[in-house]
Length: 142
Image (cartoon, rainbow, N blue to C red):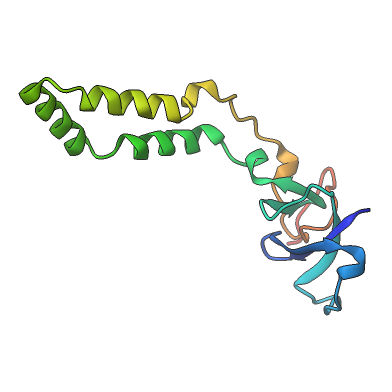
């Protein structure tokens, strides 16, 4: 059974994902900014509607950038790392070495993630609603 979601015309954000029998009445006139749209059964709030297709955010973002941020945050401030190294020198500990090994073991190495390849159909066509299907050779209104 297909699911349905309310799609926001301004950004393609999906909300109220539900079964067809759970849909409720909304205004869907010509000037409406929301509309019920059919979505795949596995659709989640991590999907957005782009050119009539529910697209997961991981298909529109470079996941390597997220991995760089995650790893940088996990390492922590350089001052804290230098403090760990100093303390290790003072007492022969391995705090910094253990910290780095933990970060490397618990975060994804950015270069291990496949290179992002942009799909032009995952860029919303200007002048069209997110629920409108992709049109080749689209010319936005002047």
